[in-house]
Length: 138
Image (cartoon, rainbow, N blue to C red; front, side, top):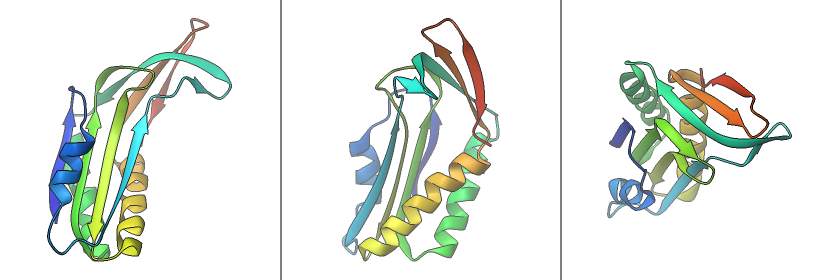
């Protein structure tokens, strides 16, 4: 059921992610796209950089295996970007495809939530006021 899993330093593609989970039996596909926003906790964001532990790819696959085992999906995809990103850039895309919309929505939500909770990725935000902060995804 895992069709695409990656942690990469190149721009992410929604088209690639959708194509990965497409199949004749799919009746619904849910997608979550996380983008770099221009503010966080009332502070203006200049940009950010994601770093990944060397096991991030393996941990992401393990998260996806658990989601696939717990939900009747026909396909799962997850890609996360690392490196320097600007406001508006895509940081993460996850997709779940199922025979029906409910399975797709439920699995997609679980996939992004578990990715953020269990995959070792860290975000270093820089703010327009000169400050910065590290945010751990897990």
